[in-house]
Image 1: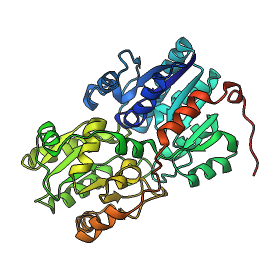
Image 2 (image 1 turned 90 degrees about the vertical axis):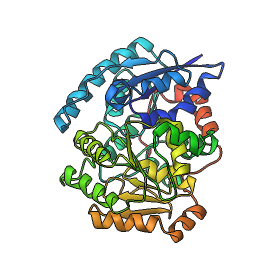
Image 3 (image 1 turned 120 degrees about the vertical axis):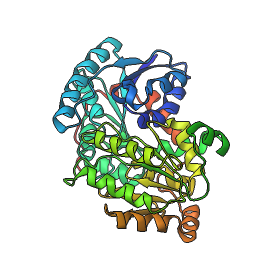
Length: 384
């Protein structure tokens, strides 16, 4: 029996990890422990630990940490608390390995705790680039702490190997988010509209905007430019989701809540849609707008355009359906106009998604459940 800990800190990473967790838990040779922390535990962000419970894990371990003070120093304080709490939880669980996805600050704290406790780390989504956020450096740091790597594309696999990782431990699985899109029964348009409290006619938009943590610009001005651009499309109904709880995220939350109050007839702000409503929304809207990695990785598989704003996702491998733009209201509105054009929408329907692979879940589960543990307990630097 292999005990596998799975760490999750946000609605986004659990939406990706949930099918992996369920598939592993269904195996007779695996025992799964969910370690839930950060945004899952804060009411302001939707109490998304309830989604973990609804997915069949009634007793996730709650790793508590403070929400921070919306500043870089506050984030460091939260990381320190997370590392301590996670270390004690891992010592209690004593897993054979821990699965970590991505590049969030709470995952850096988790990886550090696991490293010091000599628990092998399985890292999902390494080798990617997002030049506009500290997440980029965090992702690479977690890669160097990890023993088994599940990457989303072959170029990302090669990049992880170039970082000195053993090629036999680096596996191109495709992106689990794309697999989820293709294998999740979705809500009907009517069911989704009833759930979010707004109709979604042609031209509707789904917006998620996070702080770009390496952008020195005024985040309030950046967000206001986005909202000004949305004002130029009065016939478009809009769903806006909350940003992550990165430094300066509260500024965005306050602005989008005020915007929704001024536009009650066509705008809804929802802290967390959850995986089912989010994927269902992708089938009902005409374009996705913002700077979330989902717009780059998953959205192209739904055949709709993405408007990618600013520097946060700069460097990621992209489908031709992704439209990049600057941070000004003029740049954003021009990109939205292009995304809503017949030409861009037809192009999005025929574009290939570089993150898509039909057997992603099976490859991931096999690697996590069957890679010999003795091969993961020591590492050597692999020279090219």
